[in-house]
Image (tube, rainbow, N blue to C red; front, side, top):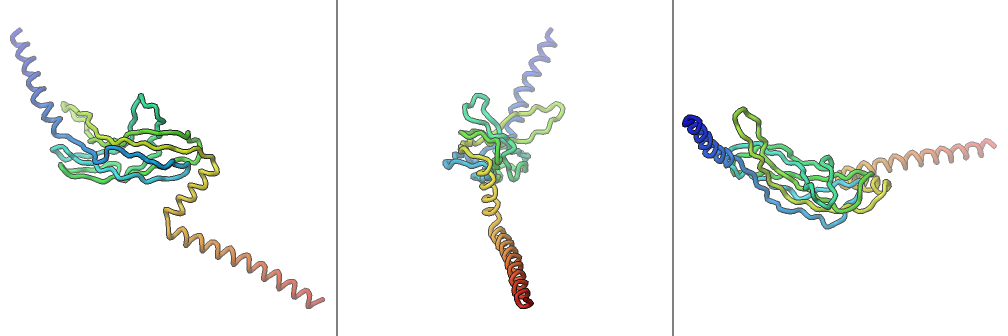
Length: 205
């Protein structure tokens, strides 16, 4: 009996002393608490949100993952995770170092429910499962709110084209100008050819 008590207290001592030390080794912070987008977003558009700043607040070097999470009881709509792109999505940080993460949201052209959306942009350490080592589910997150305006399929196509044109300036203007010049050349060459044919027929007659 005494031996069982001794083993039990030894286990408790080991758990209390080792677990907090392991937990304190990992840490994560985020420099942005909340992102609220005031303008109403459109179908087919891609938006760049303010960068997230992820900080290793722990004592060890670690890999970090940025993702989207939700509140199960939220009243707002849930934006699908596939709408988001994080650059970089996974990265490594030394203790005290930070990393800027670019956040982009691409709204599909159609089948989008208009309304208010909410999600958490979450950063957490990537913990490898090792035998005999406990993992701690720590994370930091920024709140994201935005609204999608009612839109139809044609509007979605228009905003997609507009985004591509604006995103790839000045090359989009150069390409468009080249296409217009080629079309004008083709049209003018046909009219000149028709005009020459008419004149030649008049001379023959």
